[in-house]
Length: 593
Image (cartoon, rainbow, N blue to C red; front, side, top):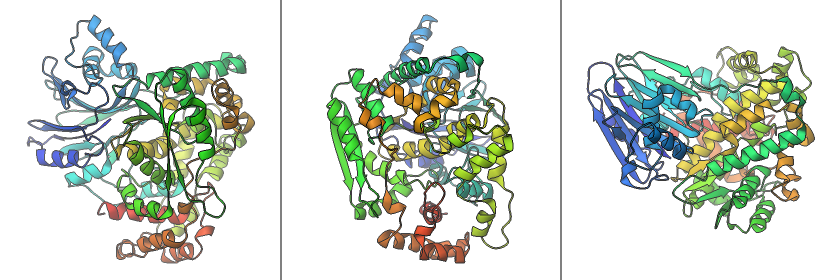
């Protein structure tokens, strides 16, 4: 796992090496083990390295293959690189390193963009051809690894984080109003290619961009998640599906053991991370390390799930570490956690992951985590009501009712008087539901959540917070073969018995039933949901600051009402609307915007 950066010039000027150095250096925490810069005329590439596969200097990046005329800067992990290496060696390719980076170069030379279909893992990379002058930017199927860019007629710059691009300078930093609409509608989710800034875009998951020397470019989607609804899948027994899920997840967890360093687990105590722990123990992982975090309770809402994480740790005899965060430490850590965000993210889990990653990084460099299971296997409460809806518009309305933070009219009422904009979020939802490849409201919702909402909330959160401490997080529930398998399973098998039914029944063959049958949990951070005391004053200080008042983004009367009664400002998904506003302002101020 690493940080990448680069500049491509289209105006016959030399690339700005100093700007690329600044962008790369700003990502030092993503890659604390090494740095490299390669510049040739109009192109310059930078890299910060976190050594996980092939710890030697042979795998240093930027990686240049002069014989093939190719170079690459790469962030991610290719879990089947050993198998691909053997296949390529059989074709006559010779390797100078033992890691996965060089495998991508050889695979691209052998198969071109079709090589992407052969890569099993998470990745974002820039690969350039010396002779043609073309550069390719590519991102993995489910957007586990990020890739941001800014482009005009003279140049294109890219980086693993948005703040890194800001270090290069020369960016239109005005707010993108369509992105703001999404942010305020979907608890901070802003789908690709948008970001909160007009001058910065992000490459969509499962997409590669071809950039030509003259500055022209085109993007190509190279993978799509379909919910086929075939007759043979409808007729398959539940027991067959259960067994297929378990075997596919076993393979996914084993794939994510490929590393030259030990692999641990972020153990929340819920079904998903507990199942990963059980499968790693089943695979014979020695001295398996597990990590849990807890916070202070607020108004009888518990701030930890130690009971369940302790149960799993004891059951499998893991080397377990619990981290308890007092309220004053949580508050003191908020500015650093916000600074680690590539984009503003309101989830309370962000600071939990940030602090957990800080502790974990002292002992482990790679961990597996349970993100994605709820979206892939139908674990959220808004799925069952969609199962009986067969009218397209009714499906859109039902999803909107349970998922959106506010109506379009309420959103407009939050912004300054006179602000007008289309219902961009509603339009996006309708367009996504209308896409081919899913034939029911519930499958359309599962597809939307897996390919959009998951990417720009839980997945981005885990990447940003773990990489802030040079910790690589792997997400076995987002193995693309497992995701494709789940998309074939009839929705009734997923949403039964409170959700994730087929996954729960598969888990019974691995982990204790007490964890499976427990109420649904999450990383609880009550202090950021029920803003009181010092936390409320922190929020007040942000929204009352001269910079916030000068920005004038939100109506003062709306802000004052929320500050006066923060407990009443709760979204349908139980998030704090006041925290949404404060977090956005904090992120903008942190990045000098």
